[in-house]
Length: 99
Image (cartoon, rainbow, N blue to C red; front, side, top):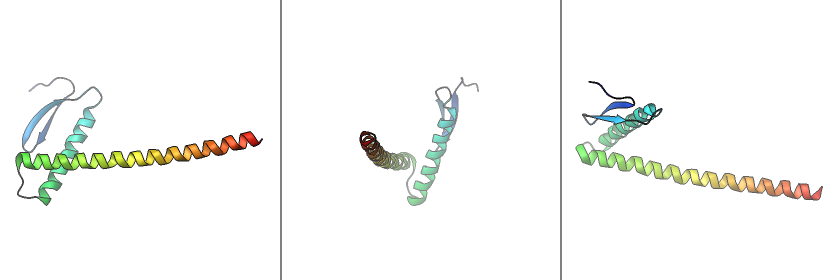
């Protein structure tokens, strides 16, 4: 079977998906598939009776929740760094003005 450039086949829950990745993003696609598979396995371990779409939706919701938490944490860190930079600039300005 021949696939075009950038097309990767990933197997998720026993189904094969041919997905075209943008040029240079093929590894990101494969990493995303591995992350999804790992999350599916973790979710299945916690909820062994879930199958198919229900398992996939819960795993996707878990990944989305993690993404939201990471964005919140990233914003807090950026805000903190901005405060530090502003305080440093203020000290430098005062020092220059006193000279």
